[in-house]
View 1 (cartoon, rainbow, N blue to C red):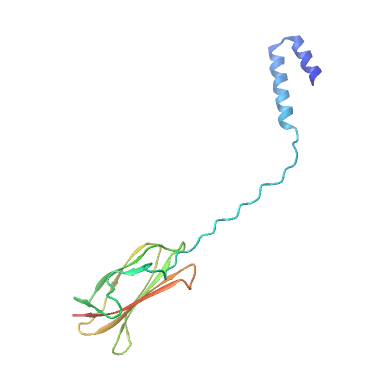
View 2: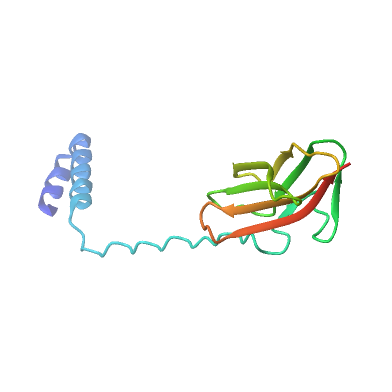
Length: 156
């Protein structure tokens, strides 16, 4: 290669000099380098699912607590189930209202959600009847990651 370069330079041809430089670059670029091991595959990041059982992880906005009765005006009640964080696959929110007197189901609703704020409209309340309302929020990723909120309500 060195001899070829000197011969080309003697010719003083710009075209030949450029051709020689190009061929040298191609030759160097195509030379086989040493084998190196493939870079290691990085470990995927570990994502921790938010706990629904943590304090204030799930809040029902009308929850009066377990020792109080929530008073409803009329036969329907709007409420929101609020989450502070949501699992990647979302949650299922099961709402069930049972008459205390005879344990019959007066209202039942199940929604699938990936939202932090979830409206639920409880219907079918009868004035003068006491109900137990149960809201169960379950992770779609981990079935054991669940939170249950229960309280009593009655329509006036």
